[in-house]
Amino acid sequence: MINWDLQDAIAAFVDSLRPYFPEIHDQYLALLHGFAAVQSQLLSLLGFPPVS
Image (tube, rainbow, N blue to C red; front, side, top):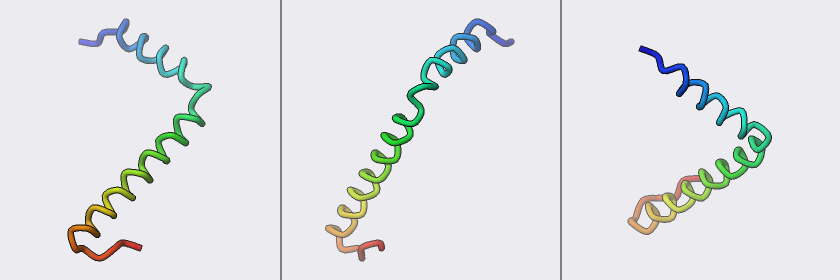
């Protein structure tokens, strides 16, 4: 059974974020890069060779 009201609410929410997609994309990439850098540093501290 499909809840059309819920589907319409989700679509409206996504459409409301559309003007901010470039900023959201940039924040996502910055967060992803930061996460990878921290994990690489942690693995280096644990004795694994750094990833280049």
